[in-house]
Image (cartoon, rainbow, N blue to C red; front, top):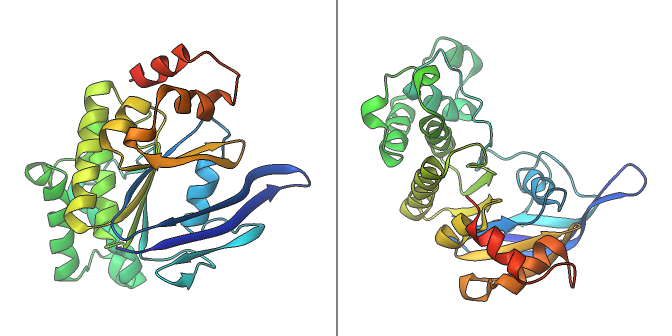
Length: 254
């Protein structure tokens, strides 16, 4: 688990494309936070900064009290597209999460340490796929593949777990299942987690705290009880841009 402190994060692409504008927040150890907002709001940019893949134009980011200046092995990402090696088993895909701790030659010949093998199996067990450990990833359903992606991230043994629209391409049943296992994994390991979601109903079911982004700015920071239909409208449409009934549409989306 890790504390996360963002102070005045701003990201500008080119001369005048502002992706993030003075974003500040603090995440406590073990907190499960959901990012909400329309396309282009800055959610993916924020996740990339949290992951060290992109540096802010202005502002600072600290994880566990240390300033982030690049990628970190203790920050893991679950992607919308799972990026598995479909010809490999679920176990082998999960084990690739240990690559940051493995010498290049050893990784090529699959010479992983026993503790990493145990971590990979434990991660598959956490996401309910231990019995499918030897199954080829390409033969799995989309939901199962995404759960293998979660297992791979857990095998990395992170302090901070990030997920970028992890259920966007899944049907409602699979989306619920993937989110259930993602939340279970975070709770089981007391991981500080930041998850970007489009489906507000799923966000409300699994989120504890919500950051609403619009036009690169934080327009909402609160708990489930504060995430009303009017707030959803403000996040997705801006002040006065939509009738309150539109919030119902987002709450009903799957």
